[in-house]
Image 1 (tube, helix red, strand yellow):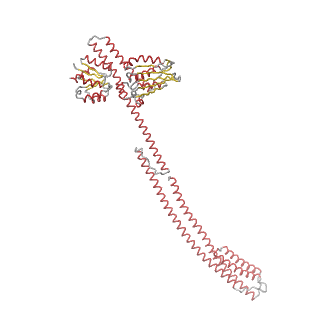
Image 2 (cartoon, rainbow over the protein chains, first blue to last red; image 1 turned 120 degrees about the horizontal axis):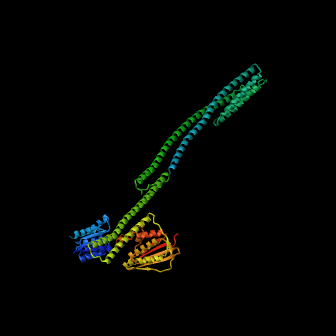
Amino acid sequence: MKKLLLVEDNDLNRDMLSRRLQRKGYQVVTAIDGQEALELMHSEHPDLVLMDMNLPVLNGWDACRTASLDARINGIPILALTAHALEQELKKALEAGCRDYATKPIDFPVLLEKIEGLIK
Amino acid sequence: MSLRRRLIISMLTILALLSVNVGTHFWGSLARNESMVAYRDSVRAGQLSDEIGRLLEDQRQQVLVLATIKETTGDQLGSAEQQAALESIREIDSRIMTLGGLTWNDTESLYQGLRKASQGLLSMWRDFYEKYNEDNVPIDIENPLPYLETNQKLDELKQEQAKLAVDRANIIDRTIALTDRITVLAFVGTLLLTFLLGFALVRFTSRSLKRLQKGTELIGAGDLSFRIQTDNETGELAELASAFNDMSVKLSEAIEQVQMAKDQADQANAAKSTFLANVSHELRTPLNAIIGYSEMIQEEVADGEALEPEQLKEDLEKIVFSGRQLLSLINDVLDLSKIETGKMTVHQEWFNPRLALERLGNSMSPLLASQNNTLILIPGEALPEVYTDATKFRQILTNLLGNANKFTEHGEIKVEMKIRDSEQLVITVEDTGIGMTAEQLDRIFEVFEQADHSTSAKYGGTGLGLSLCREFATLLGGTITAASTPEKGSLFTVTLPVHRA
């Protein structure tokens, strides 16, 4: 079973998305902020990270950059989840080291395709 | 020196030189006239002397002839002849008097000599005629001395007059030559000075004008910091230059103002774009939950799973919660838009503010619990009912309590209400949260602004809440102020009129 790390500070979205992913057969670990996400990447070794960008404590962009510099975890693909629909915001996520992104509200089938594509 | 003064001085100088010219001319004429009169007198005196000489000679011949006749024949002289002879003697005397009138200082003594001699001669002749018919004429008429002396004096006078005439003619020539020379010199001087003054005037003026031209060209080309040098000059051109300098100062001020207004407009525009991005972000977050939960329930139904009623109820509540959140956000945006376009209306009614606050506190208790905060409503004095817009009053308090709760964890939120001067309702909301710096405090009431750019990321919100609070407070005739210490907490004070006129 593939393991996903979902990083999301909004309670409802975290609850909803983790349950939907579990229904599709994924094991889901959740984190609330960027700092916790980095810790879980080390301890849980997820196959993929779904990361919201607007996060407390350590935001998504900084968390991505930190992860990409850490040899032990920089192999884990990160997929950005963002409510910012502007082109430049998406570019910013890719520049920070995310492999792909999905815009909220999330098109679930498309998200699943992206996850499968990244995990292989 | 002023242009006018330069011109006036030049003109006066030229006028003075012209006056010298004219004055010299008149003086020359005057001097010439005086000499001409003297010259004419001298010539006339010469002619008169000749006449007198002839008359004297004629008279002497007549006297000698008569004396010879009387000696030889003893004839008597007729009365008419006697009168004619006396008349001619008077005539001679009158001519000599006339000659005296033509005599000038130089010839006065000569004339007096002639006059004395002639008087002796003429009186002798007069006696001769008057006593001619008497037997023994005692007069020695043959004696030539008085005649010769008179004649000699007359000659001397005549020669002197001739000499004077020549002298005067010479003086006239010299005067003419002198005045001519002065006239020419003054004329040349006038020309020279006019040329020099004109040259200096043109040179000075054109130097000032060139500076002005260069300055206006530079200022016109956009170098508004350029100032035309006036070198402590005074006058019209220096005033013009300083007027140009003033103009460039005012121009640069105006441009600065325009630039400032443009910057402000740009900033406002940028803030609106940021706001739009924030609104979009804030709309998408609850939408994500609504769509996500709805799709999940659809999937569960489609998969024919046995739905747990408790779980289903919870999920539906989350959808409703997110929907309401979306609605309140849309309402905030609409309220703001109404206020901006001046279409926000006020509905006043009587209500008890403390009761309204207590109800609000109750409805917010789940939210307060989620952050582990305690809401303390300070009892205080009994409050009268107030007459204002209850909805906006509630919106202000909801916002302030919501903010206090959002930025405080495991803390206290104190709310106090007081009546001041029986006219003002003063509400204070104090928290023990993260607080703000003075710089952040300056901006929190601005539309589209939040204390920090990371605030929206950390705590959500569109930056509309406090702007709306301030707009509402203003609409109700009141004010809202904030004070804060970082890490200690914030204090918001709302003052509203109890009964709005």
